[in-house]
Length: 279
Image (cartoon, rainbow, N blue to C red):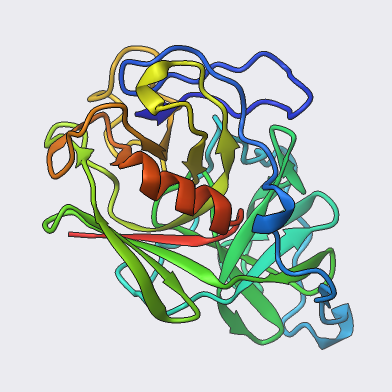
């Protein structure tokens, strides 16, 4: 399955297409049980004075990264296959330029929300007062932000997909909780390798999803020409499947879960949770 678009929670028209499914509604913020525990305050961002080197002024005409629009010039994630826990998520408080490196040029803008859904990106590195985050809509890439204009949120979970083993493992605080046999992308439309993260969740009307929401990810098809017509701007998702057909490579790139397993993820996993797909 691939999710074509995230729409605003208050019901802008959604255009999600999924593994032969029908249009659906958009990812939403998680229920209270999924959010970071109450009473844990967001960490303040370091002050601008602590940033070395200073952030250069963005050039005119930079694109804004959205659910359907990516950007170029960002470095590859240097630890694409790492299963090290990512324990902090960055949430912007204002539209901000994102840089290719500390002190380097800005390549695009990010906004606090992506199609109306709060955007929480896992922090993967810190250097000289800057932080690097996994980017949405750009596979296996990171962007750098200077101090200011953001806060952090604690992240407790991780999802690890192993394509060869056809499994998904839910990890909390570094300890594996459960592992399930899943169905992944077909050889022509493989589930994208590398690290990504949970953007939010979608309510899909088709019965093939067993009446359960989908977790929409930041990853997109590696080969946009291989997916079905109209899915060039799609995103990968994790969703339940109505038939007991797991342990195969036959989806359009999404991860199909047993319904009972999907219920666990929906109850436990919050936006910003890192997802790593291994060979």
